[in-house]
Length: 173
Image (tube, rainbow, N blue to C red; front, top):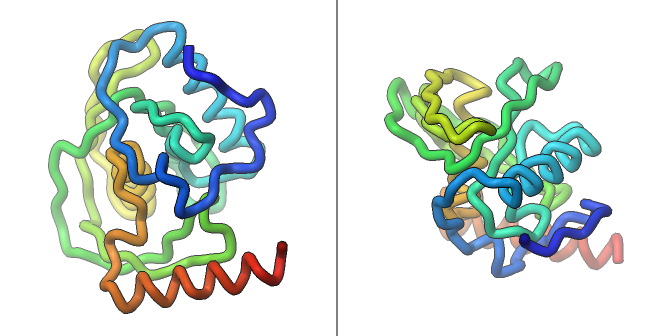
């Protein structure tokens, strides 16, 4: 079983190398369910829109996303999540990460996404998502694949976000 800190806070911080590591698909077993339970607790603790296992330091194929509108939370655990297809216009929207607190940037993503994942029993599920839920799912599935949200920015915007984060860290630390 992966080593888990019972206290899921603090989250790992950018540029921790685990944020750039892709999780390998694997069987949904008791160990993976334990990762999911820890991830769900972490999301509920901070009322996150979504989290990937990497945020709690585990390179595992698990994400939790809220499928409700941004004013509430309706969490769904996704094991071995993947994006099957995207459609609609590419739209800009604010994104951030618990691994880079205090930073929000506009990221361009397709408005709609069809995702597939395994549920807690290991059965494959597909969902059609749009708007905010599609954005959250794409963001967290990217993270499971080792793609931190800053990767979706131009180099200039990425460097500016990292500079702001570094300055925030100096003020807080």
